[in-house]
Image (cartoon, rainbow, N blue to C red; front, side, top):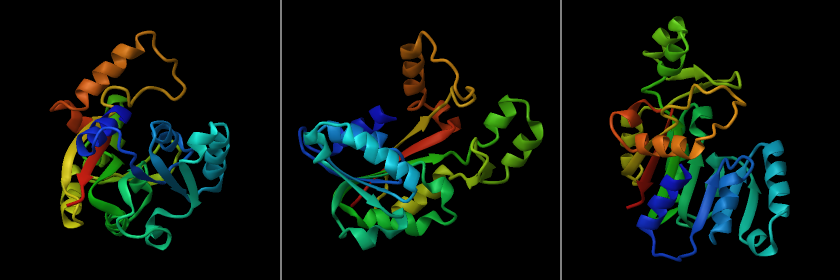
Length: 233
């Protein structure tokens, strides 16, 4: 999905422009550091102390020029209005966060307000239209049957979380002034791979297949995750 994000950023902004990026729920900072290495000014916000410590440790190992482009903030993505002025960012990332939020609409509205006009809102969410696929492919028929009528599920960490449906998120993005511009599927064929599985020898071919499927119907519609890109009007 990094390639998908880069594609959308390249399509929205002039080549070489140093973008102001907000990474909400940045985790260990992998995406934030990748974008800082590409020359962008990145602010990461994270409420989990362990994750924040890992991000700070990773940042400390970077060259000074990259460290100067990254700011780390301890906080909740729902409190962006406390930390930042409206319109402060060209790109806002919210990847792997919405599944932990019972009511995502206020969070998304707050993130949209952080965007400058023409800014890009990038979301990575669990696909609520395909929740039956993983248990179904693994032969867990009871869980698969129940998954058709809910957006609730238990993730691999054993946590009870929620998924989002494409139609509902499309309506939400339109309502907050950042209508959907593009969307992709993520982990179309690889979602059932075991945790810690060895990287296959033909990993480049695997990635090419996933990339192609993630932008092609009907495959993208049954992906484990959805990557949605909204643009602030």
